[in-house]
Image (tube, rainbow, N blue to C red):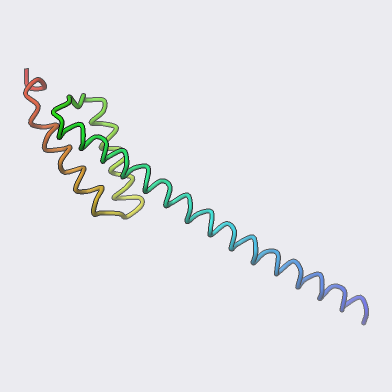
Length: 101
C-alpha cells in the first residue's frame, strides 16, 4: 500500500541519517582522543625538558604529572614517548636534593 511505501522510505531516511550521525560521532571521538593524546604527550615533554634544564619539579606538579600519565597509560592505553618522558621526570623528581631536606 501507499502508506507502507511512505513508511518504508521514511525508515530508510532515518536509518541513513542514523548511520551518518554515528560516523560523525566516531570521527569526533577519534579527534578528541588524538587531541588528548597530543596534549598529554606535549605536557610530559615540557616537564621532561624542565628536568633536563635542572628546573625544580614541585610536589603538586608531580601529582599532576602522575594523574595525566595515569590517564595516558591506563585509560587511553598508550605508551612510548609519553612513558619515556614520564620515566625521565620520575627519576629526576626523586633525585631532587631540595625535596629531601
